[in-house]
Image (tube, rainbow over all chains, first blue to last red; front, side, top):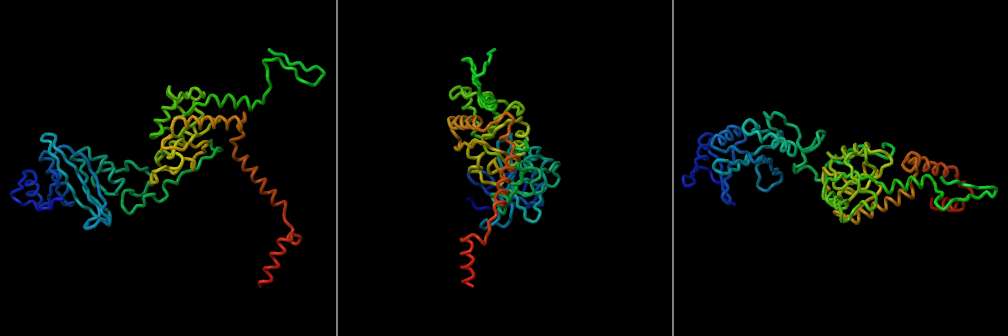
Length: 174
Length: 208
């Protein structure tokens, strides 16, 4: 894994990241096998992502989440991952930010990319990250009556009995 | 039309082309040879289910080739694949929409037990929530196994079926079980005359 570096190194100048650093301050960047990753501040995520969109990243490929509970060396509980791409230059960029318990919250990027609608709903459903400003933050894959966020590391693999909580039909019911 | 003549002998004389049977047997014979499956296929078992219906294995040989996608037209539900929490209410609703008499085959490891999917979202066996007549092991089962299950179900229908569907009356079955319980209470044991109980009581008294 490449060493994270503050984007102030002139030998690694990148106009997009330069513009981002100029707008929101020093940012942590790294590259791995030719892919650029950047960590942004969760408080200023909307500002940073809007700037990246203006810099040409017009396609939101995915919004995902990682739960770093009990992860060695992790400073934060949840890491959100935005995979951006530019249809004009074919360039890709991985944007990450971190949020913590209680009530992990981040600004919704639906105003920037419509694709974020269901992606953020999925993250909310499975990890319980609240996206403020989302037009319709309902569960995406789990049943509506479900109360937990099952991909969190502190949720038991076999659930808390939700899968057994159904009426039993006998021959008399038919 | 054949005329049955008895005369004064008290013995029925039947023409060659007439035979006597019970109405239940006749109904069972019709039902078992015209099973119309409802394919509730949610996973890879569904592919084997299709293969079972297709020309190579040809479920039509057993009178069960008419797969219908409306529960109103079916009497055999074949649950092929894992059933998740979100799907189970759908499964139950479709089961209730099917007309009596109806039967259910749980096809494959996932439908029967949850299989390898022992996770929060997957129901661990559909028989927890709906009645199941036949279980087919396998992951997925081969078409021959499903055909065997259908043949076994046909045997079951022929053996247990009644034209009024009394075999499905679970309340009646429960009443029969309760009758056994009540009967055992009627046969109360007189402890003072029972040598085994008396010996036990003596030993307990000796220890004290």
